[in-house]
Image (cartoon, helix red, strand yellow):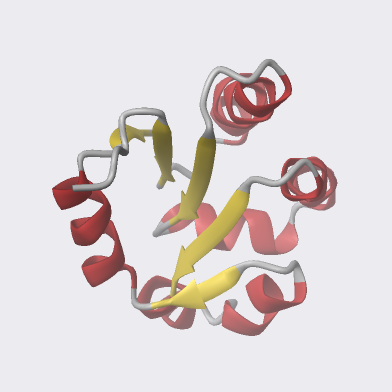
Amino acid sequence: MKEYKDKLVIVWTSDDRDLALRMVFMYTLNSKLNNWWDDITLIIWGPSANLISHDYELQEYLKRIKDVGIRLEACITCANMYGVAQDLLGLGIDVKAMGPVLTQYIKEGRKILTF
């Protein structure tokens, strides 16, 4: 089996803007800049999809996260519930069915953080 111990998946579900700025995004970006993890994926799921779709400052921060090589994914079902799927796609986020993807990440043994 392939080694996944240095692969991190961050599942961001909260619509708490302060949490996004002062914990989720800060840790995600610094994890890459400081080489704490070999591979990082940020999953936008639930209320966070709605928040990022209309918050310009968070969008700019998310662009920095993407630009350093962090993979961005979002749940299509949640995005559709909030009517923001096209907004997320426009931000360069891979919008898809995340249930099977997250399940695979867990089975692979990746480290999972949830916020």
